[in-house]
Length: 282
Image (cartoon, rainbow, N blue to C red):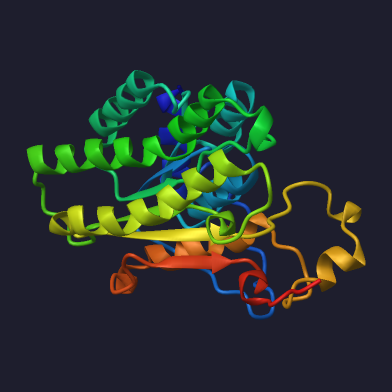
């Protein structure tokens, strides 16, 4: 777990209370760039220490939010806590007790959560004839069940402590275009991501009484490694003529978190460069 001193220090730096610390010069905006600045929203990102989750974490930090990260990668999470001031929970979210304990700790510390990005997940692909039910269950327990548990704990907290919150809240789930299109051997992953897309509109109804909107993002090919390994055919097969980046997902998260965007609710937003709308026959 992050040292609370680090969290307080980062909060002081962002608010300007530490005058003796040299503030970094603001970089000029790039052409077409939209910068977002929120009040001190309290944001939870699962799987927030790497890949898409890390880009989401950094986007909310840059927008002035307090961010808590739950991740199984202790080294990456502790480095993120030390360097960037997040509140880190080294948590295996497939373990119900561990997840609920971390959530209880966070809600005690913060009193409430404003935004949840339920992002953590695993990709385990096996030929169907070689697969086993235990692996299938583990994928479901890691990719799908935590979204339900987080929503349940959050709703019970809001019911128990009905503090006024004009913002309401945002829950953003991360599915995949594989819940709409598949390849062989992806049964567990596709089922978990399809479950997330369906759970999203169910939670939209259940969390409505608390003013919390629930939306789903379905990424396509999001490359988190070295971009130099991508080929021209990798890029050109996409109607957008490029492969996706984690920042593409982070920007949609910020957009859905804007206070005036509460009329977007229960949506499943593909972010895939157009691939799910591309007709392909061989």
